[in-house]
Amino acid sequence: MKQLTIVLLFSVIAFTSVAQSPQRIEAMRMVQNGDNFLRSARFEDAIAEYTNAITTDNSYADAYMKRSAIYSRLGRTTEAKRDYERATMINPSSSYVLDDQAKADFLSDRYWEGLENLEHAIAMDPDNSLLRDHRVDGYILIGEYLKAKNELEVLADAAVTEEAIDQSNIDLRMALIAYLEGDMVEARNRIELVLDQNDIALAYDVLGLIDLSEKNLEIAIDNFNKAIDLNPDFALAIYNKAVAYKMMGKEDLALRFFDQAIDVQLSIAPVYFARGLTRRKVGDYKGAIDDYTKMNQFDTVYFNAVYNRAFTYKMIGDYENALIDANKAIEIDPRDAHAWMLRGKIHMLFRDYSEAIIDYTQAMQLDSEMVEAQFNRGLAKILDYRIPEGCDDLEAADSRGFEPAHEALGDFCGP
Image (cartoon, rainbow, N blue to C red):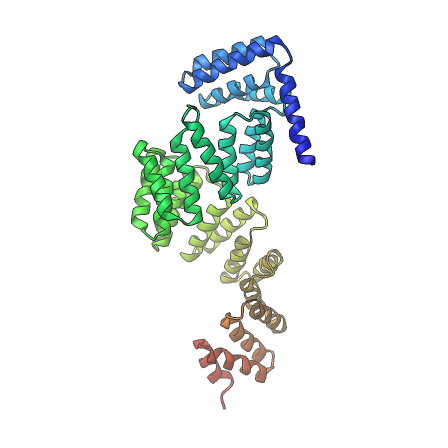
């Protein structure tokens, strides 16, 4: 009920702003003219019409917002910023302002907030197909693929009559959804429809992801290269290319392109995490720790970064920091058996065998298939002078086919 009230309130605000005066009606006509010029890429003419609208009604926030968008596209950032600030000051609830806020929310992983802003914007401007187009992105980001597809079908019908809607864009999003749902045949068919019409960098990137999922690694790299050729600053395609090289075992090339992705401003947590794993694999432990730390600056509760940093601290002998991160990893995800086993190993290094036994026991309870935890618990018990119990664990691990246990039995539990 509260949500409906808010939507209705915004609808009332939108209606009253339209019906304020003859000046507003004339300004709206000028904005419509500007929109028509924009569809034909006549940017200066569009700017002139939006300026006329502002002159006619200087409290019309949408006119400022639309002129700001064109200024931004033309690189006139100072003018764009001035118009944007003026628009938000006049009407922070404008559909265009809300749309812009939604984009910022999506970029900051605040998906639900972004969708809420779009819902309000669409309630104010229900015939605006571009707002619905942006809502599709929100649905995809939160995994609501059916809602996204239903919205895209509505937009596809509108594309027949509205120049603002691009059928290739619809097919591209349909391909992405199919890829995310695991339907690679449908995803590939949709991408081919797009590429039959135009060479689009994002289409080649998605095609590369499809090939990556099917382990066609060389073909995937070729498609990522096509995307990068079309847009040299396409950081996501560069990152995906690095992932492909990592899957091929070519860590040096993978690191090169992870670095490049970061250099072109793809400074997001997963990139640092992927590079950190690769650095650790090639023995650059300090670099790996730096990347896991940077990752935590973007996402303070990202379990994998904390876990891997603890593991790397352990490898370089910094057991105190390793224990701090292992504790943090367990705090973040107490159901992860590997985190408990890692902390058990760190306790072993501190010769705190009773604590190690507790950790290995917890790991075994969380994952009954983790034979290594049973083997390690056996060693911890032996070192804690609980030799019969320790030998029982080693025998159990040996019976389950864990080869190191067989040798340990001879060393510690023989006649």
